[in-house]
Image (cartoon, rainbow, N blue to C red; front, side, top):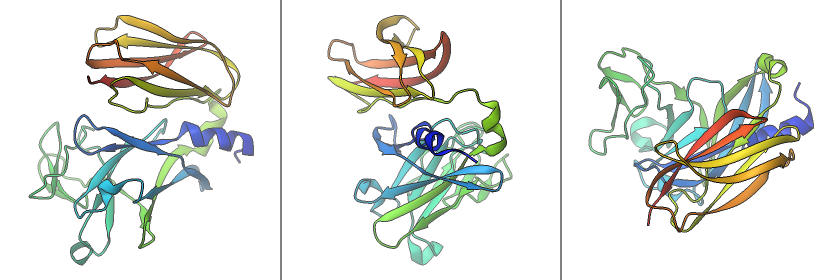
Length: 256
């Protein structure tokens, strides 16, 4: 069993980041799960409000959700609003991971309503069913429930319970928001126990631009504001180290 204090922290660890379906996958917001123990694993229940994510309101509207820190093989889920008269449901969720060699699928073709593997061209329909190509297996279908009004409940297997005793400490580095950014952006991070943390900003060539944070972090986490107004447009990375060991990195996009 996971105790209450750890459960509260894990809700931050396993946060979901929702992005637009089209590159550069603009960050739309964060989804904090309700944790549920079942069998040998921890499930995360993510409530997705259509009021908060209007991209899902039109038919064939979609978003991608990345579930942070999960050990499962699909870190990203694609949710699509489909015509109920054709599919019997309002929304479908599939893993973006092709079962052949693990490449992500491309965005849903707006005319054919097919997913194509970015690695080998395998095609899948919107339900994840295999259509053509070397994969010969379906995309993973992810369970969700729709209340028929304004909320979708996405259910994702997060972490095997047996692994919790092996994990010395959980940490989190959330995606900066907004992203892309032009003047400033916020990043939040934390550790399960008080620990010395460094957060640095590096460019696409690995050159250190700035040390954003250096010090002791409490379990409640820290939030820092990053001024990007003087940075050139482009791709940067926010890197987190705990007690001198690298633990996480996030891509930041600057657009002026």
